[in-house]
Image (cartoon, rainbow, N blue to C red; front, side, top):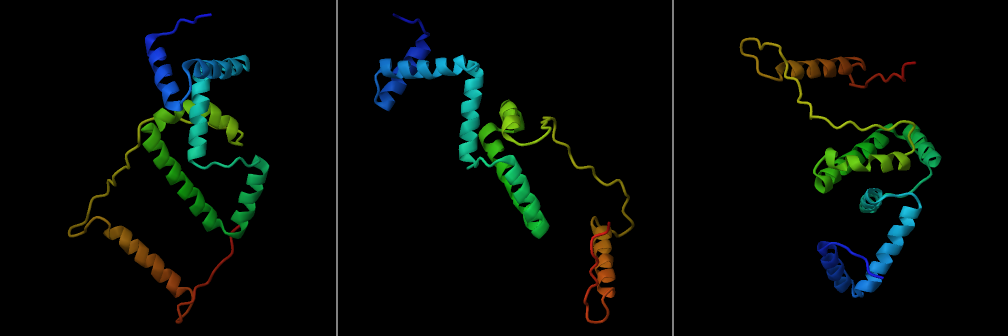
Length: 182
């Protein structure tokens, strides 16, 4: 039986088979077998491509599958013990993920195709991604006083806050620490 395919596919098959040290027949047989198995499971060609991309991203990010409830418990317990460390770890992970998305996809728009698979992999009740324009920070509209430079007001506020904290503990500089307000 012969199957008609485009010249580009034939050339790619020949190049890939040679690179892998396989015959074109063996490679075509293997690829068609796997592809037909996945189509039989309800996937279409673009979903198969996206799933392969998702798998690549997950392995490159060294993602470890952990049951969602276990992960939730671990985060809650760690947060109780050391909230700063949890916040720092999530910030580092966010920066790493953002740099990976920027390098691999060119931006969030390129990574948006993976959202349907991330939704299934991330234990969240609701997961939504909106891609839009980057918001520019608003510039302060406050006019400067004569001789005042930008940032002077903020510096004065920081110094005043520090002075208030120093004044709470007496002459030795010890600070009064209050528990969380409820």
